[in-house]
Length: 252
Length: 164
Image (tube, rainbow over all chains, first blue to last red; front, side):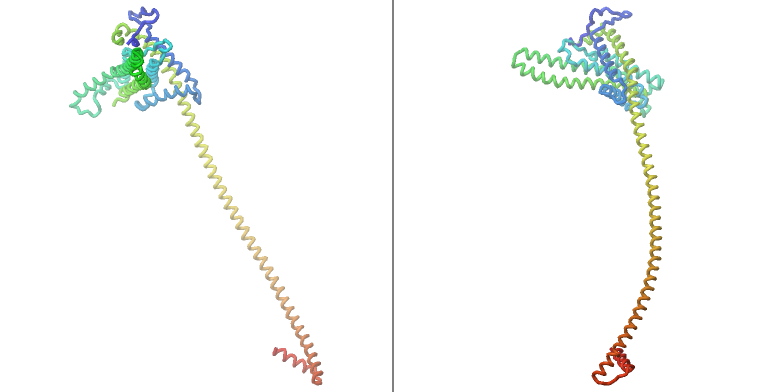
């Protein structure tokens, strides 16, 4: 579990703003690294050539991917959310992937800040606030009609509306918990398997062959799986955000 | 689980730095750079579709030009055919005329020649008669010792010639 521990770096533990601690932690450091890498990635794709190079093609395929997703789920009005959903998707994707990099080999321990529900929670709250803001700004109080699905017979409304309201309010939690749990579970699984490898190896050749080697082979497979999960979870977060924004943008 | 154990002491720091870095990502990368990347893409798409449209219109123009050329060509060919037919008819008429003329000339020549032949034959016949009469006179005198007058010999020859 030590890999999830947040530690203030280099004497910043006492930093405060208005009485709140804002120590520059290892979590913040990896947010900084994610931001810098993401900035560099997009900046390299900004040559704006007519015939794109490799980097430009890659960046353009990501923006095109988000653009297509928003257009498919929201429609033409979805284009204005591309900056937000793109930032969200790429930020989470880079964070997830960075946390899986085998940097421990060179003595740097990556910190996966998306395995903290504080972080995923804040991102989910931002997405949810955008949904609420767009909904009320566009439809006013008619946005509350979201809790009455189209074609509900009126005697059913008192029963359906609370259920819909609850399912609506659960959204930010499910959004935050899904990413947090997926990332943490993967890392714990790898940690457990690696402890098997080390423990098995230390208990002698037989145990090493019987326990350590299969665990190690399994780890290789799970590492590949985790890379997939890193992409899928970022995609799911962005996709669900897009679907929720669609509810607000196109009230049924 | 550090996520729960540390939540109270680290929440403000997590919130602050996440807002700083995600805010930077959103405002600089998301709002600053992404629209320009997408603009490049749409510019390229537009250029491609423009080029395609230009190619299509050029093709249409070429098709129309070819059609016009074909029409002109057909008209030219028809005119040429007409010209040739006319020339053929003219030539045929002229050659017919010449042929008729030649035929006429030949006919007259033939008629002349026949006339001449007839004349020559009559003449030759007369000569043959004369020679035959002489011969008959001579033969009769020598064989029978009878002197036959000329008119009688001639008469006899004529009779025998007529009977073949």
